[in-house]
Length: 278
Image (cartoon, rainbow, N blue to C red):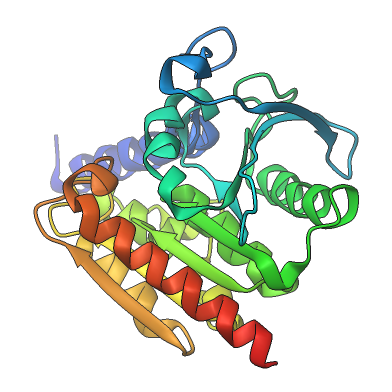
């Protein structure tokens, strides 16, 4: 086989490999667990959530849990990551009870008890609908609403913050864009240009003016620490970046411990005071 033939075969193999990856794009990005998979007994954590059914703009029925707190000072709208469902976040939610806030966490389409199948535009619609549920149905003042997104959920929180008012934005373990993540996952195959999903948090964060708090584990094995730093660098102030030393991608709230909770508490206090001044 000549050099040109070998080169042609290699090029064809690369094209086919790229085509397969693109064809499986949503399967690579989204890893939903549908009901009944998960831990749906919130009482084991001393929690009593309200079951919520609401609808996205395109009619897809979505499910969430609202965790009320007596005399809550604010409400946290939680955008979870790309794997599992809301039932996998109960331990984390239980650890946030000391913050004296309501928490609303919901499943994107295709996750948990929510209908449909996940894709980029769909999860944005779901995120906006969750925001609308809180502000329109529950009549929660946006000045007392904190948007919190972890990993892929950070992309959704940032997209929501770009177009909807809130008191503040918390971004944890989040990447800059699908293109940047593709470089990390497939360093020898430049497929970023062909991705349909953009997940461009880097561009959207530059358009958000609310106060921001960034968390990232120094040992994050999924979203490299440097991507978290890059995302932070693109954000407008006021902003703060908190490195959780020794934490990976999914254990930030565990490794962070009391210091993590204290940082959340301080940020919430700060943004609520700022809203009162305005």
